[in-house]
Amino acid sequence: MAPPGDPAMRKREAGFTLMEILLSVAILAVIVALVYGAYGGTERIVSATVNEDRAYRTAGSTFSTMAKDLASMAPAGDLFYLRSGGGFFPEAGQELRFLSASTVPFLEAGFPGLSEVRYSLREGREKKGYDLVRREIPYRDPDSRDEEGGGFVLCEGVASLKFLFYRNGEEYEDWDTESAGGETKGKIPERMVLDLKLLNPGNEDRPFSFRTSVFIPLGAERG
Image 1 (cartoon, rainbow, N blue to C red):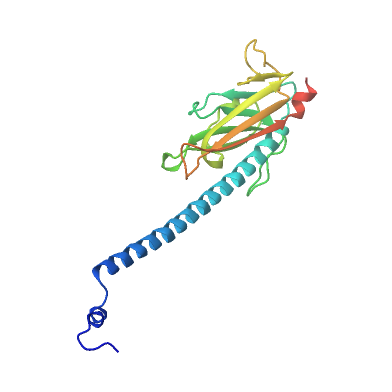
Image 2 (cartoon, rainbow, N blue to C red; image 1 turned 90 degrees about the vertical axis):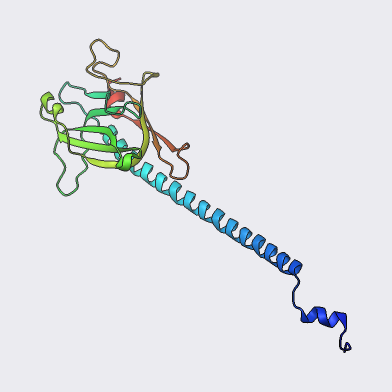
């Protein structure tokens, strides 16, 4: 036992020094920063994975419906109708109209026979990207094509949607079966490529990109 008045005893009785306290605080700050960094990194990874998974499921569902519509393309008598271009947001993609035997029934049965299927873009909620709208009307006569409105949102958060058309080894960026004297007049492509980009909430400069090819039996039969 140290005698009374011993310097070592007085130091212990005085508690921690300022240097020891500062060192402890510094170590604690480093530990907290490491834990927070690890948690934040994990959270970002989880968020990115969720966003990517949602985009893949959205693109898969969208392509499934569009592929069915396009593969079921059919003529009305001697009329072959497929038209791209126009729309309110040409910088994001074309509008697409065609005749198809495909229907997408919801509360009611689908239309019997042919329908005109239209795909167009409209401004999304809060002006974030675009909504891809699918509209289906029963085909009666050419005048019915002038009807507007209706339809349902097939896909939200679209950054762009582009179409490419292929026939006899040639690639076309637009198609119009009613063009006057054009190469596509009265003809249907053998294949189409759909190029869909969806907004990426985690990085606006790098949207999720998806592409699929659709074989069109009608185009191959009429080749």
